[in-house]
Amino acid sequence: MLRHLALAAALLAWLPVQAQLPEPVTQLLAQGGMRPDSVGALVLRGDQVVLQHLAERPMQPASIMKLVTTLVSLEQLGPVFRGRTELRTNGAVDKGVLQGDLVLRGGADADFSGEVLEGMLRALRNAGIERIDGNLVLDRSLFTPARPDAGLPPFDASPEAYYNVIPDALLVNKNMLQIDMRSTDKRIRLDMQPALAGVTIASNMRLIDADCASWEDGWKLPQVTRTAGGTIRVVLQGTYPKHCARTSSINVLDRDDYLDGLFRLTWRQLGGELSGKTVTGNAPSDARLLAEHRARTLPELVRDTNKPSDNALARTLFLSLGALEADPVLGSRPLPPAADATTYARADGAVRHWMRARGIDDSGFVIDNGSGLSRIERISALQMGALLRAGLRSNWAPEFLASMPIAATDGTMRRRLHDSPAAGRARLKTGSLRNVVAVAGYVPDAAGVQHVVVAMVNDELAGDGRGRAVVDALVDWVAKSGAPAAP
Image (cartoon, rainbow, N blue to C red; front, side, top):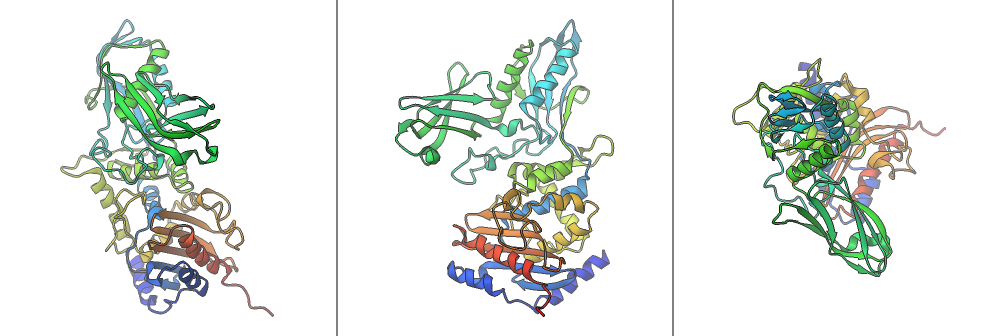
């Protein structure tokens, strides 16, 4: 602890020394019409501050905030952490009939899918259960509130997009419907996967003469209606090109309706019957386990969070920090209940406790949902730099570094820095919002010496590649540094 505090003090002592942004960076800022004070940056070589620019100022980080969530998750939950989904009941089984409710209990299982649900229901059939004489109870109580999505306004104009999915403890298929759209010059044919009992899809799209590659230009938010008989109809809106075939995934159904339709159709296809309704509730304390599924271990989920910058996975891990703890046998177990504390508040506390234990001052730090898809999240380059240094010292440093995109190679960095010595060597998490571009990670210089690099641009003119060019120029400058002098 004292060593970490001493290190933080040493870094602060260095800050006034080198505040000049490299010339390639300042040139690109000027060309893009952005001010130098829209940038926060920090470059560290070991304990030495190579460059700092407004590094102490909290800024919007966008998706580089996922580095906070994933590293703290690895440290607090451990590499064997696994979320899980359970089927439970306290009803008796007599002659193939389950006499009571069947509870589907969520446990932050990031891999819960239709195929997983089918396997769990097949286990019930193999155990001799043919009919459920009770209700299907959906238990999302691991998180408080149980429906974090309820009542929240959409983040932007695309609430149906996957990146906007707000997870809960019992989210199947990320609540996504995959829609296959194929048109002729007169009609459009639709196919929906997965098929759901009581849910149909139709089109109100007008066919037009347009380039198929630009089909999204005419897309409008689908309408969802419920008929008097209780069935649900998803209706696509807008325009669509003639002679076009495209597939899109949308999040438009209420998640209770989605799970109800998926469960009933799957159970019926397996030859089972369900007499009751689908309701929300909690598993009884005496409910016994009938079937379960465990997600992949945490390092795999961390990789799938950071490489493609998956918001739903990051939010699931963040909420898990506030709801679960490591278990040496099962991989995870619920935290003891806390009065009047939301899961978000407990996750926030877990992150701050971790930071303070490593001498990282959390003043001005704001973590909203742990994914960076937020207008209020804030972190300084100094705080992010200290976190990245802690990542190098972590027991799980190999897993953490392996989760980060490699410049010019994979993930969100696959198309960037191809002509830089950083290509294939730098490991960098990216971030972008309408007015934010950021990178943070590890960049070796020309001599192979590892550097911690953080750069955030918060400017209304950061879009259209301008902010990206600025932060990539800083990475390139670091990668070219340290070269031996020419003879």
